[in-house]
Structure formats: structure tokens, C-alpha cells
Amino acid sequence: MLLESRPAGWEWSAGNRFLLDSGVVRTLFLARLPLLLLSPLLGLLIYRWGRELAGRAAGPGALLLFSAGPTG
Image (tube, rainbow, N blue to C red; front, side):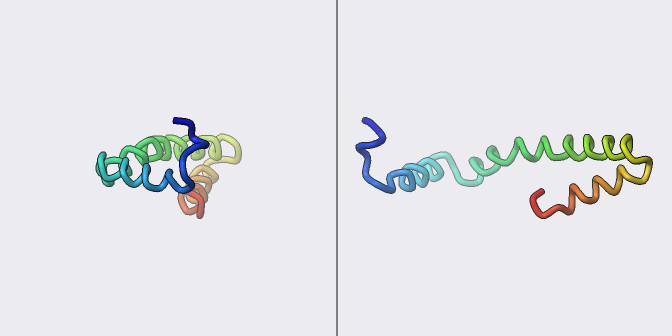
């Protein structure tokens, strides 16, 4: 069945059915897992880069800005 021939809003019912069938908590955990693993690595990279770029005190400062940022 082509996607164009489906009624408007079918995505919501398909998404809700998928979440209910696979478990909401499990699905959200698996969706967030890559960010849980990559964020500390990015923080370490920012710390080391700031320390190398601007000296010893800049590493913790850069890490503070990264961890307290509104988009992080």
C-alpha cells in the first residue's frame, strides 16, 4: 500500500500501536541509550580540547559550559 493513499494522521495511530506493543519504557530507553553513551565522550573531548587550546583552567570551564548548556 502506498503511503500517499493512506488517510491523514495514520502516523499517530501507527506510532501509538508500536509504542504499546513494544513497551513505552523500553522503547524510550533504547532511543535515549546512544545519547547516554555519547554525551560523556563528548564532554571528555570538550574538556581535553579546551585544556589544550587555552590552558589548564579552560578544560573545567569548557566542561561546565557544556554540561550547563540549555541544549545539552
